[in-house]
Image 1: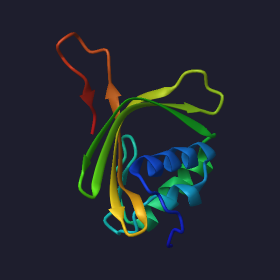
Image 2: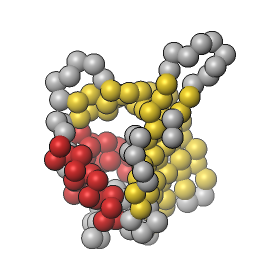
Image 3: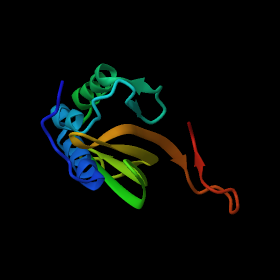
Image 4: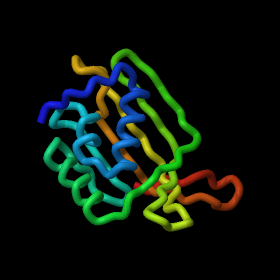
Length: 142
């Protein structure tokens, strides 16, 4: 399905993705994705999904089976190259009325400049283990 949305910057694309996520709007979530069968989405502790149909199906299931969610991000890091931008952040997910967030999750989003503007090519979210002994660092589980 071709998206009519145009995102002039990767930040606009990212903002649209998280707004759509908060609204549990699968059409709006899919509007940010690249029209590329090599697109990849990895949800926490899940196998990689490749291609439009698989990614859409996963978002539909998440939105159908979960209460509305809100994401709180911190430690945003953006790395820009010609035609591609990588965005990393640590995120906590608030589900419905739950007072405690789920997470933290380490997220990497890769944006690609396309003829239709910036698009999300890869979304990879991995659970983080924090609070390890000093000097052990932060561990990302894959």
